[in-house]
Image 1: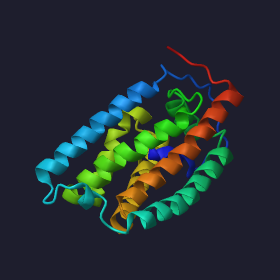
Image 2: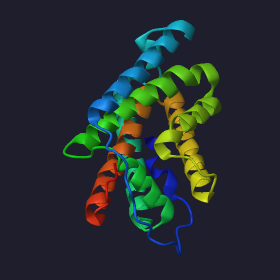
Image 3: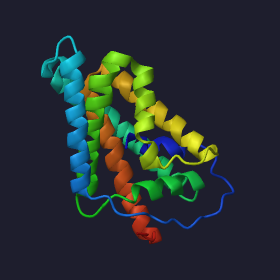
Length: 215
């Protein structure tokens, strides 16, 4: 879900306003189960392949207090960029496709916050905490994109799909560098902040435009 801001950096001029159709709602309970599965996979990888399979080794880097402060600061910056980008390109085809993807989530009440926390913790634990030390930054980021292929519905090899995939890959690389030089907790907080900003903006967009929900 960190790729929420990935589709906003492309040419959105002179495009029609396609009607969005959103598929079945993804509940918070389902997302919790996915997060638990991701955490279990991450724990298995760390246990089997890490030379030092401890919680402390996962969160190595800056002291945790500094990691948290850095995460809040950097995350706020990324969140502002995501908000401005989505609003500026709200009529563009890529942004509306991205809104349709994420509008499948049940975004009622506090759910955007809980979805963001689950994604920020689980995905960073797997891709930056467990996989990146083993396979490196670039391969971990490629796996991150592949893992989101279904969520982003990468079906047609067109300009929008390529732009979204490249943006998602760039976001993953940025999070990987943050985890490497700041710490895993920093990356988790940044990821969560981006998703919070994006999901609340998407919920507002869906309500304002009365996006239809399809079964």
